[in-house]
Image 1: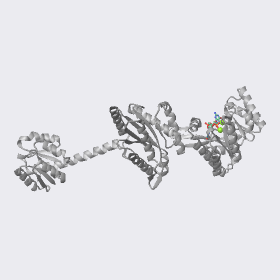
Image 2 (image 1 turned 135 degrees about the horizontal axis):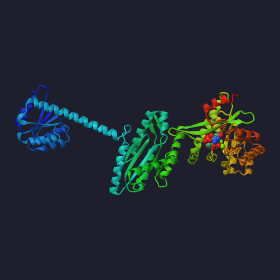
Image 3 (image 1 turned 90 degrees about the vertical axis):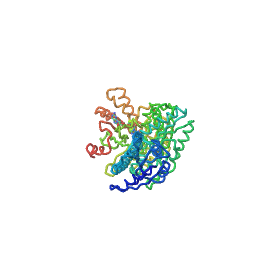
Image 4 (image 1 turned 120 degrees about the horizontal axis):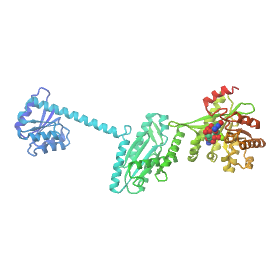
Length: 567
Ligand code: C2E
Ligand code: MG
Ligand code: MG
């Protein structure tokens, strides 16, 4: 064990060295400094395992000697040597960080050696404890994957930033980021790759920002940035720009190179909120707004995005994710020929399979999908999946027709024709087997556009059905101009048949009209035998409704069909 003995009295130094040299427990190597400055000089170059320190030196007296050694930053354990008269100082020295003290007059070999060994051991334990504490702190406040501040530390830092800004009369910008399509990457490349990407994003963010900005990770693919010392909102625009631009370069993960974008929302102290909670909430709202607008977007909070719309924004953003993640399923409702009773077709009806909320009906998300333009990719998926399924059945020996619903937005989408044609072609179905359902109100909304699109659809050999007929106040003269194959009587008419004379009259009139104009007519929402009898009497061609079957998942539909329509 290497000992630094700081002792100006040559006799004392000699005695102590002699005791240590004769130690039988372990060998000691002793270096001696006679002054404090010599000791400090020594410690700056060399290291000892223990320091034996006399407090009274030529250039320093008492506790300040100890303080000077401790202040030199040496973690070396110190055992203080005291004279008979300054035992009190020695005791204080222990309180201040020395490991032990020995009274010069009564030192024996055994006591000296034990004191030094214990001092070294205690110091080792103390260091270990200190390191464990640091590690624990690191874990409690940092994200173990990226090393960034976690949610807890992020809240602390935001609180501090607000305090500073209050004092300095500056602004704080709070940014929330959520990567676009992260789940996809995770699912397709594996969690390892996902983790690597998150690390790469963390690094990218840190290098894009000033060291005074705090980057944190508060959840899966959610990051935060606290931008301090903002004088003008403009400054935050620059920071947001810088962040968005930092995503322009591809990320390299496990030999793959790919592009990732992010949605970003910003709120400001004090304008958007003066406390942590409201700033966080509003940055969140702004981020959801950005996500709802599409990929690679950023958005600054403004009060019109009030909390009320948050639910809606979240839904919209979840819907976008759902489209990326393929969280949809199709159910199929049989269509029955009323003349021979055979199932000749199915209508494909989409449902959203949300992990948390279960199966969501189309009425709850189609309007939102329309509003956000998501109906285009969603409609494309529906078309492809429906064709694929019906083709699969065809290959199993079941020849069946398919109808798919089109929304208003899709009809206005210039590439609709191409994407429908592609979906049908890719599936290998014959176009004559496929029909598109367009609701009456949509068709009437822009008659010229509808006619144009319907003609294109007909040119492909695909059928056209007017859905929910009777609710849209068609001018009957237009009906002759649409190249239609079938009318579907809205289910609201069925509900009160045969009780309501009005509805009986209306439904009868629609059926007669269809006959006269040479359209086929399909009744929707048939739930009772009486309704069925009514339809038969009027010569309605076909029907759909719970009386026959609810819309069913593909597998159940096949099972149902085997039982109910063996032909
Ligand atoms: P729709 O095209 O008129 O579809 C018929 C709706 O009536 C379906 O509701 C079906 O489950 C329901 N229905 C069928 N038989 C009966 C019955 O006997 N009684 C009652 N009470 N209801 C019956 P669903 O599946 O909730 O769909 C609602 C609407 O959402 C559809 O009305 C359609 O306009 C729209 N939709 C569904 N799937 C899609 C899609 O893939 N794309 C688009 N653009 N719209 C879709
Ligand atoms: Mg329909
Ligand atoms: Mg309908």
